[in-house]
Amino acid sequence: MIECLFCGQYFAADFNLLDLLSTQKKRQGRLCRQCLKRFPRLGKTRCPNCDKNVEKSGLCLDCQDWQKIYPDNLLKNHAVYRYSDAFHDLLVNYKRYGDYCLREILQELIRKEIQEYHFDYYVPVPTSPEHQKRRQFDTVSAIFADLLPLSYFLKKKEGTGAQGEKNKRQRLLTPQGFFVAKDAPIKDNISNDRFLLLDDIYTTGRTLYNARDKLLEVFPQAKIESFAICH
Image (tube, rainbow, N blue to C red; front, side):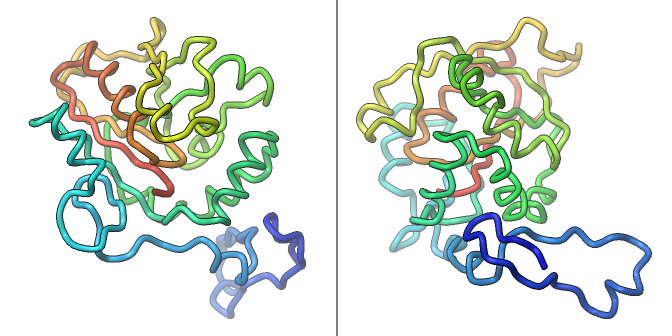
């Protein structure tokens, strides 16, 4: 029996005959079936730019606002899940209270999908130094480090605060404090490479746009997109 990391109930391991005959050990999930249903996938009708669910085809209102600022350079974002009460509870316990084990749930939710994206660099959006010190780990890097070869190009200044503690207007107005690390693993021919920014949640897009802009200051010819687990 396996303990579900979300609800704490025990459930039977999901194995079939092929798994038993296989020489490769199957990775067993840490979410029971009931809890897995609480994390809804995005529907078919999405914003073509940020993957947000929309009622009718076309850019969502947020991307229309970003288009006014970046008329020829919108940031293409990829997402898998729709933000829900379950995601809210999960991220509060993971990020605010520092429950490191919960990263396994987030990894399980995207383990298959994230392998479909092929880029030269996978860049996690960094946590502020004060939050990392308090939690003893970087929340975004901890999710993706077991799934992708990460490149730590970006760092964040102290005193910038957490976006999750702000409302939408405050998020849009708050400087993120990102900068490209001096010790970043930079190659000589990196200018035309493809970067995928990684984050847990896409809300207004401010965080990812700011991170993208900082990378473009150093690598103006780079092709940059982003991935967030939920939107």
